[in-house]
Image (tube, rainbow, N blue to C red):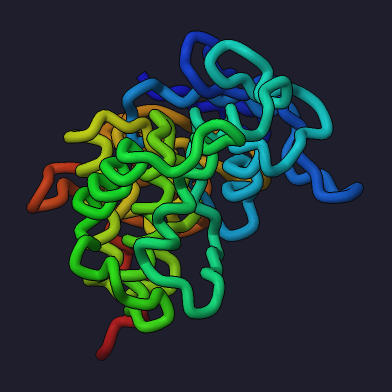
Length: 279
């Protein structure tokens, strides 16, 4: 059953999953974005965080990835407070694709992807045949093998996003966190990236956590939704249970109908036509 709490109270996460947060207060400087958040990412799920602009989606993802330290509360990774791990150990357990990734000018595709192996390198362990095999596998999984010798600067937006995903995949982490991976892409490339994410989840066993703006994309691809409004989590659960006309209007202020997607049978949101009727 979905967890749904009215107002600005947040649902409480469970502590039996690999990644969860308890009592999180999240802030930038003195500006508080969220208070007392509780969230649990189901293992082996494709979890998508949705909500209106500036509701705290990316802020929550940054806290879960240890790129933002909570003002209060704690994020746990594999049963331990995430801030007790060395940075390289976190990077061996959790891969992050930030919202705006910028490649060094002139860098080649294979070179950029190889940087995903950094957490596995050390003074006594340099580049190896194992690293080469992981690099090849990451490129094959993301469909960029043919681009290996190209410059990242030459690529289309969709190709570039696949390369960034390959770099994160090369970290060999069970958890992948993606902040708005379809931003600035046209509809064809959005679907391409989301299909790739679904493949990484279904066929390669990764737990994915993504921030998405498009609620229909979220409902189609996610196995678990986290719905936010004004810095609070107002609902979480399976899309078939969470996505209702009432919830969408409560969170987005938009009257809609929710119907089965004719392709997937997942919930599909259709805005009510509010245009004046012609005489």
